[in-house]
Image (cartoon, rainbow, N blue to C red; front, side):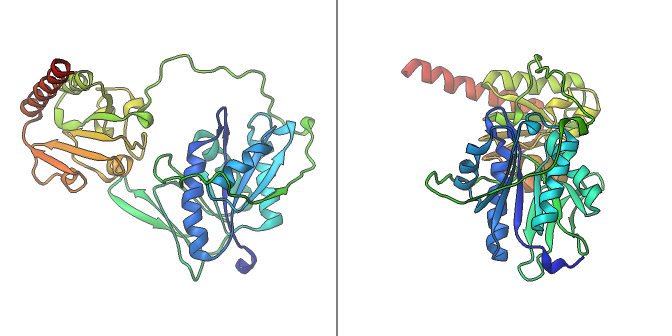
Length: 340
């Protein structure tokens, strides 16, 4: 493999019901920085059925080029068809870096592509950088149970690939007038060659916790002592109209469902306000909430790592402090009602 043959930064543009997935737009922002640092073009790889007009969205969010597969055979996501399309384009155009969102689709596709191309893949990346001279992608993520941050390199194979968690990177402000080049891609692929058939798509009807969309999150950790103690978080959240979050320890203790978990093995969040109550501040939790607008931590341990990541820290017993906060917020709300 001649590494010098590979050039350019690519982002797989995942298509959802509403258009290009938010995480793909975030990756275009990150990819723009990498491409500018390397002095190479940024491209989106767009696969689907009736998706041609979405290329303009990619240009608006930073792409210079869009490699487009627009064919009914890609109407539904299937690993085999999408994998073959990605591999065909990679072998034809040789990008040096290919990024995917760490969604169920992105993780499935990236692992299949990496296996077939026999290249490296860093999963659930939280930080990206590139060496301007060598072109080595520096993909960082928590390791050893979240106790350290590891930066992973792929020195001998191309393309270098990574999946990136939603909400970790920031999308650029769109420029609707921005334009780029669409490169039409084709592949000799027939429906009868694909072993998987989509018979029906059943949408989830159960109400889902939308941590990634919440403006205010009240999160609790192992420091609350018990499932009964964790009820303090629920009461506080209800009183201020917030969404309930939790650390991995609280989830593994069975105090709350996994869908409330914030962190590397849960959800990455960026609320306007994040309350961390009884949370020690393990790296795997910090990477999931560090981009919150305002972080307020409450913990009895003055040396807790969470105090290095918060904007405001309160050292003390949560069972004494949180009721005081609830009273203060209640009084503020009463004054707003009183004075209009």
